[in-house]
Image (tube, rainbow, N blue to C red; front, side, top):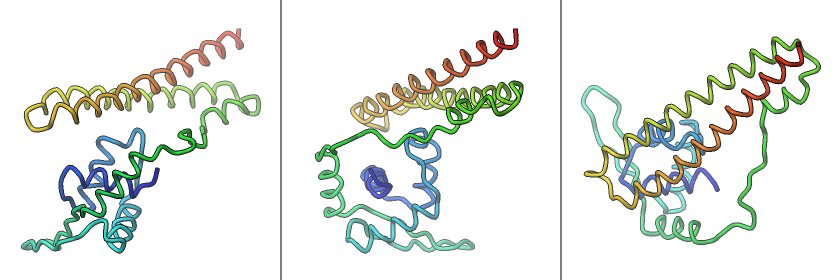
Length: 183
């Protein structure tokens, strides 16, 4: 998957500025797909040059003008094609820093590894809390959002809760075993 497909998918909901897209990345899909504002604007430019999105300038008083992007029929077709073409492999290359640090845990003080695992748990718990809030928010959006969209959003939230919950459980078990090792 590319960031461009994520942008096209988000633009199927409504026209948005790059800043609004960044806000959606930060507040909803960031637990499975992240993006920097500079990446979003770069890819919006690429999408516009391909004819997948168009932009319209909206003047504002006392503030810089807004550039609002909309998906084109060509862009919608490209997005649909991407959705319908199953890749050869869905799994991604894994780069898990906490696992790498734990793998080399014999090279640092146990207290430092415990500190890092606790910090990892806290970080993942914050994501779990945010996902739970998102799930609650979907309950309140039923009037403005189709139940079909909510259903599919909830499927991704469910995966996030299970994955991050398992990571927390793993780190807690590591802490128990480290505690036993210290004896």
